[in-house]
Image (tube, rainbow, N blue to C red; front, side):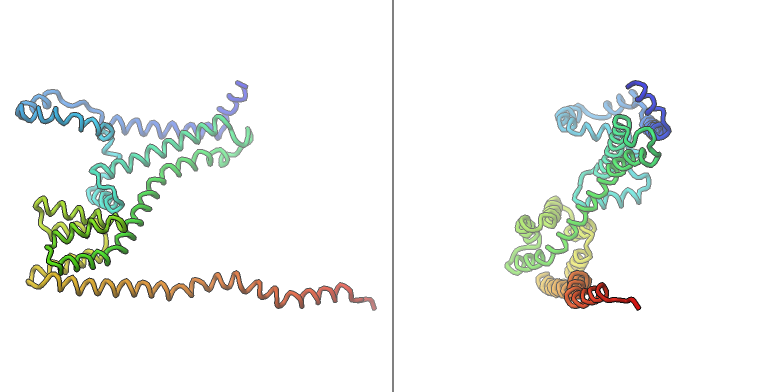
Length: 329
């Protein structure tokens, strides 16, 4: 048994897999040690002296909340390789996570950490499978040995990417479908005499059941306006967060209405009518594309049975006639 295990460990595919795992581990250790410097005690004392005793008591009262973010503190030293180094890439990644529904300040870092952890977990699972079960025996090729290692590693690495893209697509679809209804509700609330802020708050409550993603965005707008932020700026940020051109156009309509002093209800009525027409045109477009999509299915599942029914008896008769015919001279 020990000789078989030693032979498996010294085979070429297993040595290649072990070398790959050792190289990845060394790279991770180097990156982990790059930011492992200890904080300067003098700087800490200066910071405590700069703060007052009241701030120290406030900090102590918030220690329980800080304990909940222990994982974030552990990931802080890996920040340089768990987050994009470029500010542009960082902004794009943060916007992508927000559009997928992850609004935490460390969402980008958690996303890259999930890719790293799941990728390394898949690598360890693959190596364990190869070392313990040694599929293919001693004569296994490098490809047969590497595939059980590479497949779980790639699956673990790309699963967070797939999940975030899936969430992003679902939220975009939900926001696109629910925005015309939200405009109609805004128009009704505005014409009923409510202010824009009250209308947004009411629409956020009414949309929770059908379109929770859009309701969450309207709730964010309502809370930001209550906090004292400018409504138009908040709506602009909502358009950027949602990534929807219709919402951006809606914000432009409100800005023009506020600039020229026109009625917000009239502007909403016109824009809501345009959104309803756009929804009808999208439905008609999908209905017109349907016959083209059905053509391939019709040809695959209808034409071959018809040919068999129509031509089959003739082919069978020809075969029978040729089998009974006498070709001797």
